[in-house]
Image 1 (tube, rainbow, N blue to C red):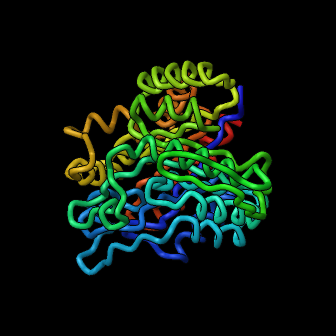
Image 2: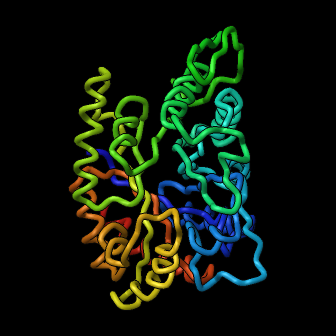
Amino acid sequence: MKKIQFGVRVPNSGPLSSIDNVVRTATEAERLGFDSVWVHDHVVWSTEMHRHHISSGATEAVADTQEASFYEALTVLAYLAAETKRIQLGVACLVMPCRNPIYAAKQTATLDWLCNGRLIVGVGLGSKATRESDEFGVFGVPMEKRGDRTDEYIEAMKAIWTQPMAWYQGKYISFKDAEIYPKPLQKPHPPVWVGGWMNLAAKRAGRYGEGWIPGWLSPTEMRRGCEILNKAAREKGRDPSKITIAIEKLATIARTRDEGLNLALPTIRASSNSYERDVDNVQFALDRHIFGSVEDVRRRVDEFIESGVQHFELKIIYPTMESLLDQMNLWSKEILPHYS
């Protein structure tokens, strides 16, 4: 069995987003022994989503005067490449249909050198992200067939990463004789982890990915997803055991269950009001994420491991940076050694 790994989302968006806080989170995660740090991706964002789709921080930290800041994912990782030495750097996930795959391949190959081969490239279909400012509309990319487009873009990036004179012919992207260097430091290329929590995402990961990193799935749903992934990989002639199974989870940890739940519940309730989330009650989130005491956290982590999970990306809920650092320290002391 692969070593169980744990990573932390840094605040490149959300009410506590700032470059100082991004660097502080990443360097502390490295010092405490976490395996990875993560950013997420949107170019177009909004005040609406700033208040409801909180992927770092907490709803208590939202203020009326805040702008909906969202620092660009790959640029942030390039900065962190110079601020860290050991820890893996991941994005979960690039909104792939809105990224030119030729340029994205060039950026990520360069980034892989900047971080000395520590990059994980998460890719996903994306969403409108907001009613007020439709990201797909801004980029002029149709939502229809975004899955097919993403499949081609993954293949196109891998062609650029691995072929001396890259060639690709598809419906949505075509090129030939593309001499693009440097190739990535990691060989044959950085691992591509496919995001998404629907069955089609599991199939996509089995066919095209080196990893799968869904979000809102329970342990039982993860087990079914892994079965779908394994079947798709074998049908494609791939070895499913070489595909990393990861998850992206909201998380809190405290000395008591009540403390852990009190950290989580306001943000869960705010998120359930977002039009993008198919969440009709708080229990739906409690069944799928990691909240509570040290014992609660270990129990839920064990459930996911039994379902095949090997890497946890933790979106810790924290109303202040001090709360984040306290929770990271507790996780490092009580959880990481338990799975080392």
